[in-house]
Every structure is written in structure tokens, then in C-alpha cells.
Amino acid sequence: MTKNIALLGSTGSIGTQSLDVCRMHGYGVKCLTASSRVEEMEQQVREFRPELVCMMNEQAAADLKVRIADTATKVVSGMDGLIACATYDGADTVLNAVVGMVGLEPTLAAIAAKKTVALANKETLVAGGHLVTNLAKENGVDILPVDSEHSAIFQALQGSPRKEAVKKIILTASGGPFFGRTLDELENVTAADALKHPNWDMGAKITIDSATMMNKGLEFIEAKWLFDMPGEDIEIVVHRESVLHSAIVYQDNSVIAQLGVPDMRIPIQYALTYPERKPSPVKPLSLADYGKLTFFEPDYETFRCINVCKEAIALGGLHPAAANGANEESVKLFLNGKIKFTDIAYLNYEAMKAAPEKQDFTLEDVLAADKAARKYVLETVK
Image (cartoon, rainbow, N blue to C red):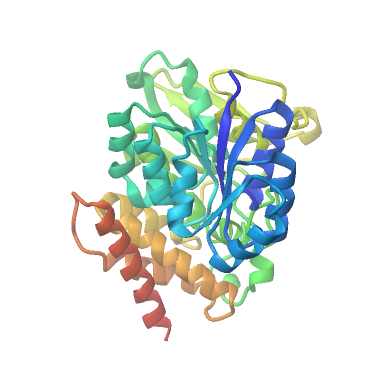
């Protein structure tokens, strides 16, 4: 059966690589969404002929309508438009590749509409936690991870006889561009420095998160929800080459890992073809070319954002949502030259700690905690 995809965030790094996979396997692309990149969206519309397109920015939506007036594609805008794409009748799989908290509501809507969800938007599970996983269980919906690390864990788990056989998860991290630096040495690094990732081609926000290692902290929280594992059974290991993408440890201490060249099209494709394996546009891995693979303990003293996330998930409730919201705001401030690189972890921690204690939360509670954390960061900096 041909899959029909609704791709949320189609002009970003994950989105364009997802279209490579759709192009190779002939998947139908029924919906596309983006924030404001009109020219890129016009090109995608003309190639893939989606039935519905959403631009989050209303002015961009108006511009796109004029540009593609000669096509049959309908253009919508804003959060309502994003949700319309996530629940579109003609799509059976929703690949959520948007960046940030904006991804939470369309994910919940897609699950409620009983769509299979291929999830690249980590904020969905970081902030939404049990709201997302409980709704998926109620609706019998699969959440298939697209992050390279979570896809690796998911792939390694395919051979598990039962959940109780798994002893631990090993979550790998590249270490980002500042591996080996001390906290003092990071005091005056610039956004340009932080955007030079050694292995992955990602958008600005995710690349900064990799540099602070907040990305790994968020993935730590995501792994807890995706695989129903307590935090103490998730180990973070820095692996500079980004070849071993993550692993699981069984009760007998056998370790099963997934390896491949650092190319996001592998996990994207597995989420779309699961449970099948198909030819990939990615080049094969040659271990001999690498020669050696290295592994290190994270430097928790320098990269304190990991600790922010570990404490947030230990506290539970709305603390992860607050940590995530604060981080989105502090990363924007850093990219705009308003704060230092080392301020990010401090702001994230203080905003996270200030979140209200509420373990049984609603979507409205999550959105309020996110908004309050952002306000906390902006007022602290001001």
C-alpha cells in the first residue's frame, strides 16, 4: 500500500531530507507546512503537488496563494492550518518535523485523528509527556521516532523478547563543537562558533542545543517517555564520530546497537517504511574508513543543560515544559547576541525550577508553563 504523508516542517533540514525519502520511494505527499519560506514551499508544491499547504505566517500564506494560483493546492495558515494538515483525511502518516513547542498541538491532533505519527519534534514529548503517550495508547496510535538516537534504540528493540529483558538504554551524543572545552573557555564563544557542528547539518536552534548539550537533555526526557524507562536506566555517552547512534543493554549485559553514517535519511526512512527495510539514498557505512570509534563520559560541569533536563524529569509535572520553553527563548537571545553562551544553562535552570508543582496537567497547563518560562527568561535578561 502506498503511504500518503502529511509533512509538517517541510522546508527545514529534516523536512527536505524527508522529501528525499518520499521522492525515492514514490510516497504521496498530501500536505506540507512551513513557517515563512515561501520560495522553497513554492518549489515543493510544484514538485510534489500536495492537496493542502499551511504557512504559519499569514503574510507568507497570502504570498504563496498568489504564486501557486495555477495549481490545485489549497493554502491555509496559522495553528488552525497546521492542525488541519495534521488531521487531513487523505494522509495516513504525519511526519512532524517542526521545531519547538509549536509541534505539540498538531501531534495531539494527529493522534486523536488516529494517524501514525513519525516524530522528529522532540518538544512534543518533552513538554507533553503523559498527555501524548496516554492519548496514543487510547487511540492505538504508533509513535515512530525520527531522531537518530531514538530511532537507533527503537531499531535495537525490535529483537527484544519482552520489555523486562532490557536493562538500560545508552543514549549517544556527538558532544557538539565545544567538546573538551572548559566552562571558562565557553564564556565568550559566539553564535557563529556554536553553529559549526562537526557531524550533522541541522537548523540553527537544534545546532545551538547540540553545542550546549541541551539537545541531549531533551532527548533524555524524550527517551523516558518513548520507551517507558526510568531516568536512572538511561546512560548518556559522548561518541564523537556519530556512527553508533545509540544502543540498548539487555539483562545478560549483551549490548545491541544501531550504526550508520551520520545521515538523517536513515531514521526518517525507517519511520516511514517500518516495519519494512528498503533501499536508502544514504551511502553505506565503512568501519574501516573510520578506523576507530571513541566514547567519553559527558562533562556535566561544563555542559550544565543536561543537568537541567535530568532534574526537570526527576521533578516531573510541568518542569520539563518550563525547561523547554526557557531554552527556546534563551537560544533566541543568544543567536541575537543578547546573552552569553554560558547564560543559557543558568536561565533554563532558574525558569525550570520556578514552574508550578502540578503532576496531573492538561494541555492548557503545559501552554501556560511554557509561556511563563519564556516570560521569566525575558524579564530576567531585561
